Image: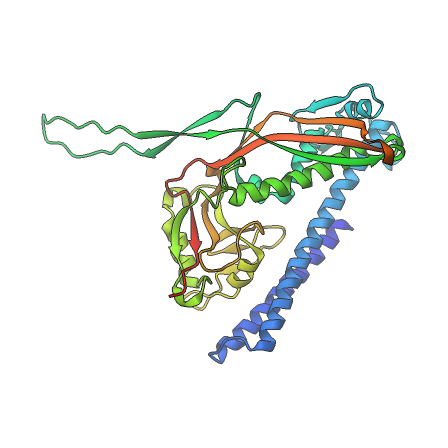
Length: 399
């Protein structure tokens, strides 16, 4: 049933895009821009498309939540709807969470474990760390695309990188060859501590039927994901990560006359401003806000073909054949705004100190009879290759 709903939402999305494209094509056939009424309709359709995307994401999240609940019932020894069979209980991080609730321990560190996998032999338990990261990925698109490095401690991590390569040259017979050494540099990654307080009533926390670990994971993962997304997108590196936009390289500047809005030619130029060595690697694509994406959906190339192509069956949307990722932490198109990125996103490195720490207090909100969980993660991010791996479009100033 869920698969049918997901497919139905995907079909509705495709129909909505065809309707939006029809408006654009009709206006183009009359060699004019969209009328005011058509522009409003186009914006409504774009909002519908975004809404369908949101509904699809919620359905997928609901499916995962049901799996988490089923897994928790399994661990608690409660019957599952498996044709009368019962799955074998598998020890997991929930035991540590229950110990926190029972007051048997005041804090615990959860480290990376294998994600849940289904098979004829049952399930592999999903750790708290993995579930928190899952929700972080859902809210922090930068982390989803970056290279993530996990370390055992929080000491400064120096990542070597080259800023210039060795060169070869032709030499004559018996002539001396000149040395050409690569230029090396290091990028430093620290460990900023992100903390979120999650509160749960004492009665609910003690209820054996409540998936407290899943609740913690959803709340903490979403909160940390939203906070890190902003910093890893536009952070200035001062007591916070340096964002991918901040450390990207200038690619294309828009014309002054359009006050920050990009054109089809701008996006084409931005795509070809990135070296082909990066473009040919997995993880290369676009990143922009929903507002910028609405503008990009209207653009055509010189052959009258749309730059945008909707993804089917869960595949990402594409621009000029490359996947496009929505990140509303990025600026909307405006004068001097870096509103579009193109490049190799795995060149952005995220360092995480291994483990998510969870501590519990009954005293923090004692008068409300609420138990407070403190969840913390130490992380940092930086675009390691700043020689042109990721480039941005910036809106031109009005002359």
